[in-house]
Picture 1 (cartoon, rainbow, N blue to C red):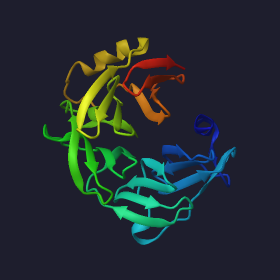
Picture 2 (picture 1 turned 90 degrees about the vertical axis):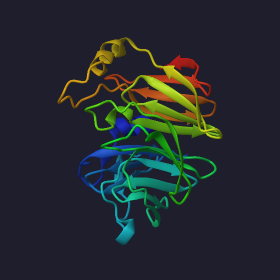
Picture 3 (picture 1 turned 180 degrees about the horizontal axis):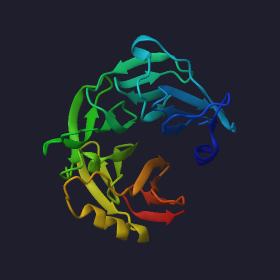
Length: 254
């Protein structure tokens, strides 16, 4: 259903999305979509082809450029310029968690830990790839290492996140790799390279540090865990997904 929504969903009442940023589906087959420049979250009921906006909130619940969204235990988590906001499934505002930095991707574990890959314009060597926070947004520790390639303002270390039990997965947007972390120890336990014929040509784009270079090749477009499998969506003109087991072993391609 998520792939169907991504291909065919349109805004209801004859309008158009301004800048759709993130999509998540619920167990019933409905889907939530964040419209970054539209400052809104839209919901599409199961099997619907249109989406309607959730009620706009006032005060701290008002959205300002919503980006990544995540659904857990009936609560909708949304990042925006204010931090991380939590809403009910119908759009009622519940909580603002101030993170004091932008979030590219995040995930909430079963024990309510928040793991975030941050936007950092001037990252330091001491900054981690992933920040672990408690349910109130207090930083607990960092996981993983950043490349901090010069000239890219932190963008080379953007990663999509997913979790399963004590495992945390980071699929790197601008590196063809899947990293597996042990959440108990905070340690990287596996890094798997994702091979593809197209990626062999793209890898040359990251080999230099030419002044003024602003674009990066994109390898990965998302990651998700279902059952005992990790699914990585590749950033290609035609849809391709790589399935891994929880230890990072490749199982299949679709």
